[in-house]
Image (tube, rainbow, N blue to C red; front, side, top):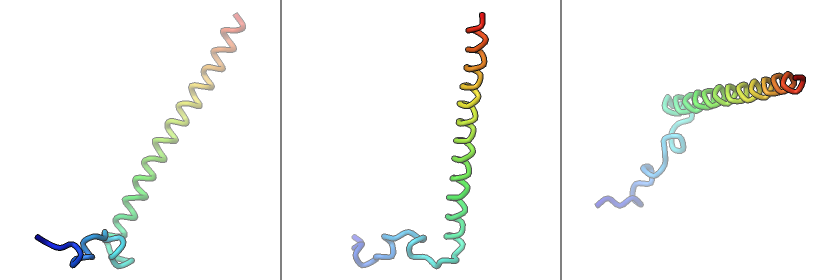
Length: 67
């Protein structure tokens, strides 16, 4: 059985123990930015949909009150 105390490098990820300019670190940073971008686009779409629904509800609510 392998003793994990003898292999501390296996306990850390490549971001913590790797070189700052290593390709894996750069790829991980780009992946994080990509995911943040996707979340931002989805959230912007949700906010736009809610804004549109509120605007339409006010518009049709005013027309219904006038009748």
